[in-house]
Image (cartoon, rainbow, N blue to C red; front, top):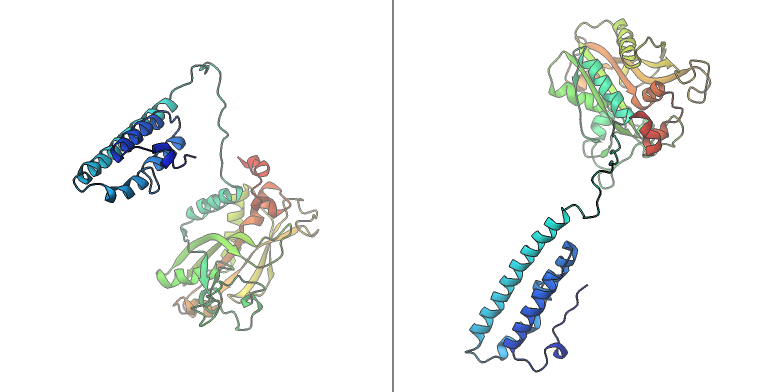
Length: 360
């Protein structure tokens, strides 16, 4: 780093004019000897910065005879302008020289091919699902990661005392974790509240999907993460056959895996659907024989599903006596595990390039 060189030792016995001449000469030498942009930046700070070489000179101006001040002030400005021009010129020279091929560089030596990039397997799965659903006339919907208690729970028919509302399950934002349900903000624990927003802002009938990351305050293991991906699909219409829901599920899985996949639907309770189902697929990691991923049962839960609850339809501005439909919320991470036969979901979120490069 350059240090301040204006002192009595360096300029002792000189008048202001002589000092300015020496500053000009020294400055030109330092600019021409700078061989990198970083070094030139230091020179610029030394010469023209707030604590540069002119600082002490300007303090001596009031001591000059009043007739000398205009000339010395003009001289200072001329030197500053000269330094600015030389610095810009030297910067261009440094940049030009740095772009030249070194004399000892052998242009005939083969280069190193850049490593190829690729989509993260979860992203690729999301795109594949988007394509599959678009082919069936669905629209893609997206929303912010932050939502409110009003949409995360109230409009989804969650009871006021439901444990999912507690901080042990949901990440509430500090400073926005009190007040009315519309004021209480959290990282979205699921995507379904965003579906209500869609119902409120679009006209029926509805056929849309909603991919995104969700957040749960829970322990991680081979099948669970705190931040993971879901993929929600919702159909709402005046005349929708419930049996078509299972056909939809099997069709989507066949498009994703390229073959028929065993599917089963078990009765399950979720506040936002009635009736509700746990939807499982045959474990593709072990082929249904039983492994750590499927807890040795040969099946793995990939999504809840069912008919939207009447209260959810009302929250979306619809008459449940007039409209019905079918809802599924795919655990996207688990679907990716099934596609590639991976037995630990944490690997997909580890940012370990040795693992991720396998999918490029």
